[in-house]
Image (cartoon, rainbow, N blue to C red; front, side, top):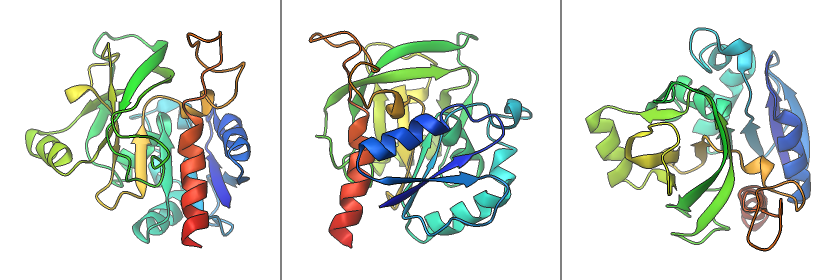
Length: 232
């Protein structure tokens, strides 16, 4: 399976996302923000970072990049799309996901290993988890607080669009402890924590078994690849 990873000016985690795709058994295809060519990929990852320096609003300029016109069309046609941190912000600014993301309620950038609960396992990126499973993956953001008006929030909750929820501590003031959501169709997922930083022993979060041994993020990349093979 070919998974495109888009690089914007200011992307930081594109190489990490590419490595996660390879570790999951896929072929990582680098894509450039200024192109209109998705190069025949089967899925897309929008990585973390500070696209365009986070000017205006995080993800607002990137949402108007040439390649995002192709991403929106592909997503609306059913292609799996994963937005991580800044990628989540870009998906929201592109109106592929509802709500918004604002400055952390404590006003500071945060970096920590974050516990999450998996709320929805029907998306292209979460079939490898069990519903209610608790996982730990790194979190690093300054504008990660998820917001939505009351009507939108009720719809997201009522229709099962919450995919991940923060556990133990809400690190940024997100409403209802929401860490990640999906679109109505379930092929587009965005989350603030970074699964690509928890895919390989020796480089992930600490676990009771060993330091830096957490690999809870790998299942997101394995899920989309396995789902593609099953549907082929």
